[in-house]
Amino acid sequence: MTATHADLAAPRPIRMTTWAWIATGVIAATASIVCAMRIYPDPAMPACCYFAAVGTVLSAIDVAVMRLPDFLTLPSYPALLLALAWASSTADDTQPLFRGVEAAVVVLAAFAVQHLTIGVGLGDVKLAGLIGLLLGYFGWTVLFQGLFVGCTIGALWAAALRLRGSRDGYVPLGPALVVGTLVAVLA
Image (cartoon, rainbow, N blue to C red; front, top):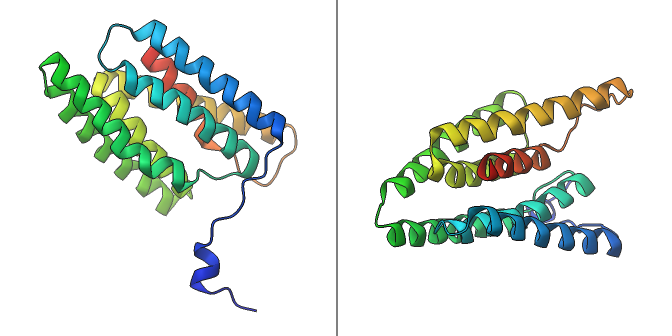
């Protein structure tokens, strides 16, 4: 039987235990609190706290089912953009916001090329745009640091799985990118 377009577009359930959801919520709340404590009084604090919470949930889902669902990534674009626009208006400086948007486009394009050439997941591409937006707001150096740390963690994770004998070649990149982003923001 051939799958129809409607079958392919139907959302798949996210199967995680109740305890996994509880742990994810606790970790997301903790990450947001750490961001708030570290970044305060920067007006970008709400954007960072939002990313910490959503990034944690996305990471847990990616580890559990190897995908980053659109219902979390796509609404995060306007949410982060509005939070960073508010931060820019509060700081009376629009340059960081424009740099963040520019970085989002650059990182999204770079990951889209990787999706087409080496098979990076489409969810990772969408997450990369969010990372570009947030880290680009803080500067190009912070963006490069975050991507470097995230990709290094992802590569080490893949190597560890390979050494353990895993041959499927799939590593959820989302958690590594989220950790790299948080490390760069909190450093």
